[in-house]
Amino acid sequence: MIETVLGPVPASTWGPTSMHDHLVSDSSRLARPGTEPAPELDRVTARNIRYLRRNMLASADNLRLDDPALIARELGATARAGQHGVVEASSWGLGPHHTHLPDISRASGVAVVSAYGAYIPRTLPSWIARMSESELRQHLSDALTVAIPGTTFRAGILGIMGTTADFPPREQAMLRAAARAALSAGAAVTVRLEETARRGLDVLAVVTTEGLPADRVVFTNADEYMDASYWDDLADAGAVLEMCFGTEAVHEGRIDNPQDADRLDFFVDFVMTHSHSRHVLGQSIWTKTQLAVFGGRGYGYLAAEIVPELHRRGIAGARIDEMWIDEPRRLLDRQHVRNSYVDAN
Image 1 (cartoon, rainbow, N blue to C red):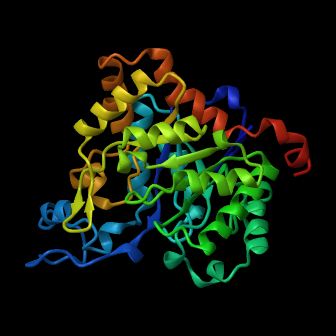
Image 2 (cartoon, rainbow, N blue to C red):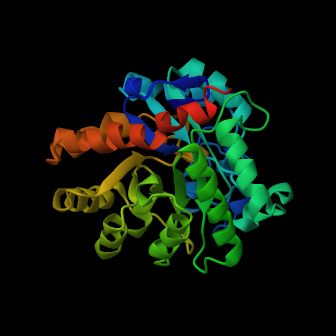
């Protein structure tokens, strides 16, 4: 079974899925000043969009997705383009608002799976930052097997768990807690790696030492470190590499996102030469300027443009189905632990 915000559904019914997007979130803790002179930035408007394409972190409002009705309308484009589901990946530190998700799912016609987790320590609210490792494990376990706090639905996957270049003991403890909670519930975990470091194998070792198989670990936003040798190492170790498309804005002097043309060139070459590698697709929409109403690509971009482009570039249909349907279904399905908690609840 796959846990959605409208309740569990059979995995056999699951279709094409973005494994990484944000629907209602608040990443304003990541705000940073932009270049000067700057326009008025209290709200995202037509007058400051061009500035925010170059200074994406400069407006706290740009880092908030805070209009559920708008998101439902925009998300509807994905259903019309043939996408079945989306994983809402906002963890604590990225300001999740889980209670809005059922209404968004109903209004958009898209099946929504809610992730649940804790991002990097400096972004966390104090109540979760104070948790011990065992307390966090229990909290995450309850989200998977009972309900996400304040809702009547369960998390379908854990994440995004954040890591930084130093990978300090606190982050390791958080990952151990997530790994044990996921293992007990038959769930998977998504982890974001610091793009300037090469700590993926260290991160994977912490998780797998707790018993969680490597193929239940998704490294999100792997497009941020398009290094074929590094990808080789992570793929050979068994992890799932998530390729996100659509984020091309930058923050001058801090964030330099690749362009989708570069992402496509790298990804197609890697997939065509690595038949064993596991992948999922996403967009990681997390700012207002990525929404169609503000001139961005919108949620429908993956299904309407990227997947057809992968076909045009020669990736076999069966291989695309693996990353677009089969891997999401496998990662989200918890059928094998059904008797341990689904029947009991």
